[in-house]
Length: 253
Image (cartoon, rainbow, N blue to C red):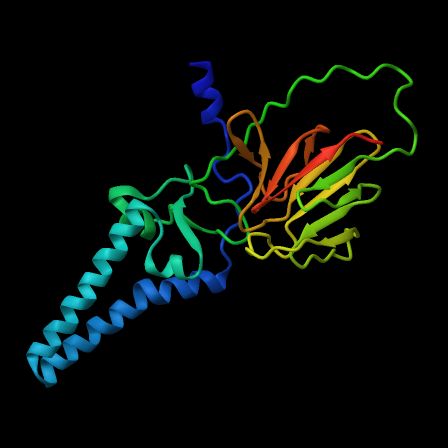
């Protein structure tokens, strides 16, 4: 019971981003305006022209609306939201609207989230990872000025003496300067600016920069994804999976 209540307290919208007006309008145009325009055209054709064509347009419009309502209730991913890369979910739970999708929509109980700028509410809200136990270093063993080294699977060794951004064609924002390293990626599984690594003198920190294929910490038998844009501490010796590439964080030399 204690575990169930703890999980229930997790905010289903952690790290999500609400869709902006442009995406809402675009999705609505595809899911609502287009079928209604088709329906109106069918009615006009029935009244003024060949009724068979008009009824065909009416049936097509009703079919599109029915499919949109079914997808809205089941997954929140209609034709419109899929086109703009968003999802419509309940404001309270982050789940799909369910059988009362139309009523939930008109009563304002649904919200659209942007899947490009934030986490999908259907994805796990927490990415737990248990780091291996490391014996505390003996006093005086650490050397001032020493920094960890990143060992890339391509053989390069990069000292982490300053913040570093890895990617296919990385760039550092003006408000968070960093060195950049362009990593050759023939399979194009790396994002342009994929991951940021930092060393604060005691701890290595990793930040996935909202990459397409994610950043994973390799564990025993499974790999755990890091939450996008969250500064996560990692121990030395850990292996990070970045797209199809891997790197190992080596201890300070």
